[in-house]
Amino acid sequence: MADKNHKKSFTTKKPTDFKAVKRFIDNNFFHFNAAVVKSASEAYLKHLNSGGKMFLTLAGAMSTAEIGITLAEMIRKDKVHAICCTGANLEEDIFNLVAHDCYKKVPDYRYLSRDDEEKLLKNNFNRVTDTCIPEEEAMRKVEEKLYVVWGRAEKEGKRFFPYEYIYQLIREERLKKEYQIDPKNSWVIAACQKNIPIFTAGWEDSTLGNEFVAEKIRGRFKSFNPIRGGLEVMEDLIGWYKKNSKDSSIGFFQIGGGISGDFPICVVPLIQQDLMENCRLWGYFCQISNCTTSYGSYSGAVPNEKITWGKIGKNTPQFVIESDASIVAPLIFAYILGYK
Image (cartoon, rainbow, N blue to C red):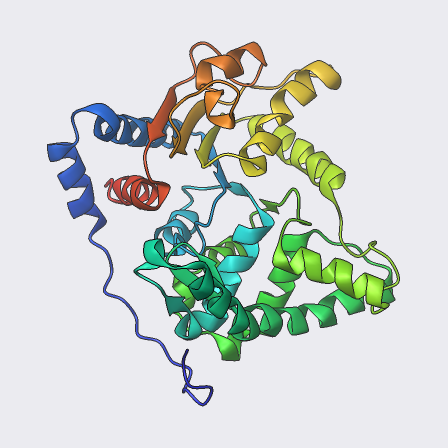
């Protein structure tokens, strides 16, 4: 853990040579998952260059894996136009932003005993594979700032989505003096600067969501009204999709599985089959999954199956990359950013 008197500063990393990464992939990725990485990247570029937009979904622990280093640049360069993520990914980008120097790396995590794990707990370290998030320096620090904006909204009778409260913290510079990484490597800051929506279904399944519930029970907040919930998120997504797909095809780039992917992809059949309104199908689909397709699990839902649900069409470019998203996603983003 870093010294609490540690001077908060950060060094700017050398810029990535995205063109060199693209050249490497072009010259080396010809077979199996590698070939799909290249094909999916080329199709992503073709979709954008034909006037399309891209919707990205983020599951797993990608923020703690510092996906913001490349994703933030994708957002700034208008390669991503909206995001649906888990509550954990929304908050963990901010945790990393304000507590990076206090994170604990555990490179030998595979060999930890149960006693070792309990020791981490007692020292207020929450482990995510090889990285431990420090509870006091990350979670509690952000919670204290959120109490202010949550309380202000309740007092004024206003209601906001989870990401809008995070945007308030950023725009009001309530966390700026706490930054421990270059803010250009925060994908949430990039999204805030571009003012793109971050649809967050299942906010309750996050540390900050849990904390709001606890504080409501304790009496700090009178009700859950300040936080706009999942059904309202879907309604907002419908409005966004109808507006943005009117003149553009919207692609779907999915990292991992779970609610961040399942939730938004349903917006098309909802509009067509439930609202009985015409709209475009998703115009591109790519999923990075670390699971081999199997029966009964989420990974069994291959792209072709989505045709039967009215989510994509038979001619929609579709890709599944069975690999580690913490490796593959930055490569795809670098490929796209390296296009001249």
